Image (cartoon, rainbow, N blue to C red):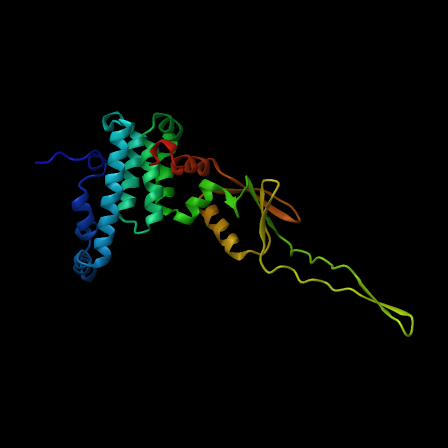
Length: 249
């Protein structure tokens, strides 16, 4: 019998998991439906993505000389749950982030930092989207870096345009008119290391989602703005999901 790979020894049999996940615990119509999915083109693409991801991880582990038998309980928890999450993920970008989490979890310095938050971190890895992960890791908006987020609670005030003065040569009379520009419908920008959000509903929705994941917390509210900082969990997720330069090809 072929010896299990290092990744399989943490996550269990990949081939069995891919084909039968969920079937054994279900009954009725949905149970009879799930086996049909294994023959679909989508399933084939999914298997190929996972096989490629596992192969890439194996190569990284062998290259770095990482040892499965030396894993702490926290490392085992994060790596095992990240692999199981990867098995059910069809988003290629999220698979890449999960691969980073697995590789980084092997490092002793990362393990000591994340030891007491393994349960929370694995739930976050499961629930976070690839776009949200990118936001947490990069913390940039339009290529500008920020450290906190400020949402204005009042409408952005319109900027008055300069007065225009015209002269009627015949009557020698002066007339003046002022044109008020309309406020921008959506606006978010980075100034002095803060991300300012005015009326950008998509950005506000993203921030609400990050709040629900405990990746942001409100630290101040005043008559003009609400101020949010990244939580310690967000910083640990950033550590887990940041690409290790040594692992780049």
